[in-house]
Image (tube, rainbow, N blue to C red; front, side, top):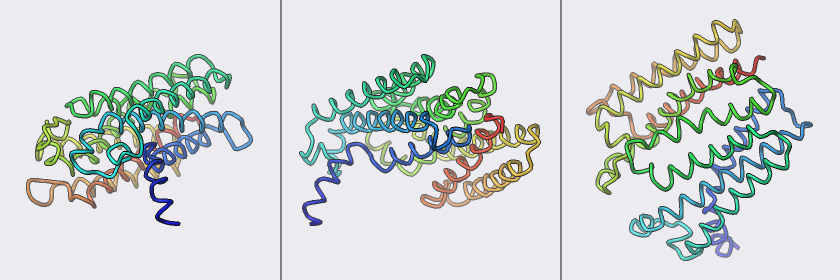
Length: 285
C-alpha cells in the first residue's frame, strides 16, 4: 500500500498541499477574527478562493524551478517524470482561473475580486522573476498583509481601518522571508542566485531581519496600547519579548548569524505572534 501511495503523494506535492492548507486555515482564522463564522457562507468562499490561489502559485513554482530541481536531484513531481511541465503550467492557470470564477460568483464584490488578482500576481511574480533577485522580499511585503486586508474588506471593515495591516505587517513579512532564506544563503550564492539574504550578506541580512522584527513588533504594541485592549496588549508584549530573545540569538555565534534551526523558527514564530494583534485591532473587536 505504501509503495502505491507514495507516487500519488509526490504528485500532490506539485500543489504544496501542507503550506497551501495552512495558509487557507490562517485565512479562515482571520475571517473568524473579523466576525465571519462557520455559519457564514463568506467563510467558505474565502477558503475555496484562497486554496485555489495557493495551488496556482505552488504549481507555477514547481514549473519555474523544474530545471533547478532536476540538477539538484530533488524529488519533485516534474523532475521525477510524474507530472509534465505542460501539465504543471496548465494546473497553475486552471487554479488561477478557478479562483477568479469563485470570486466572481461569490458576490463578495469587485474590489475583493481585484485583490485576488493582485495576490496571484505577487505569487506569480515571485515564481517567475523575483525569487532569485534582491527584490525577492517584495511579493511577501505586499501579499502577506494583503490577505487579512482582503478578508477585512469582505467583512465590511473600511479600508482606512485596515491600513495598519501594511504598516506593521509588511516589515514582519520581510522578516519571515529573510528567516526562511538566510539558512540557504550560501547555497543560493553558489547557485548564482542574488536573493535579498545573499545581497545583504553576513551579518547584514541577520541585522536587517532583527531590526525589521523589532520595528513590526513596536508598531503592534503602539497600536494595541492605543486600542486599550488588555488581552491583546499582553500578546503584543509577549511578541516583544520573543523579538528581544531572537535579537539576542541573532548576535550570538560566528559573524552574528542566526542559529540555523532555532533562529529560523524563533523568528517566524515571533513575527507571527506580533502580527496577530494587528489583525485583531484592525477588526475593530
